[in-house]
Amino acid sequence: MIGTSLLLGLIWSGLWMVFIYVIMKCFPWEMLHDYPEDVRKASTLPEPSRRQKRNAKIFSGIGSIIIFGALIAFGLFRFRTERTGFATLFWFLFIIAMSWNVIDLLVMDWLLVCTVRPEWLIIPGTENCSSYSDYVHHFKGFLIGCIYTFLMALIFAGIDYAILHFLL
Image (cartoon, rainbow, N blue to C red; front, side):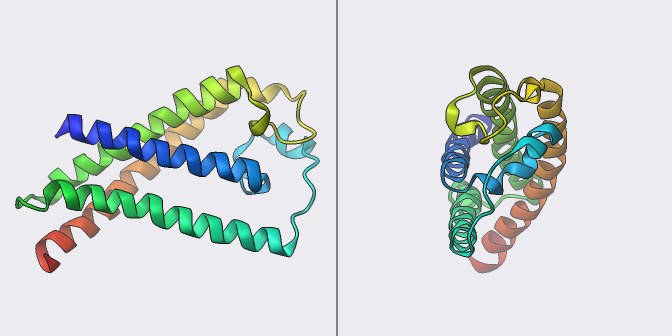
């Protein structure tokens, strides 16, 4: 089960990375709140138009349905032929979700943001901000992500459990 959940965690992480890449390329103001304070203050991003805001909401909505729908599908597909308890579903989904949290910290934050710093991650006007290299800022985000991961696994394990035990 652990191997399967880690493999699915890589797939789920890939979905997240594509989602974040598109947001950063097309709707960067949507991610500005995740950056350190000096980046938010130095940003020269223009105020998005009404149409841009609408498109960002549409993309975020569709992306969220795909990402969280995949998480539900992973549990349903894995346990569709066997009766399983809530705890097993929880740990299976927790490993998948925590895989993303770890990959987000190590690959997205520490490798890409802090070290490589590709152009598509740099908010206009913030090119000289030192906090792009703030590893502690990203680690704090990881710790907060651990709490969200736990809660998300609880919720989605409950959804999968209900579907598997009461609908299928």
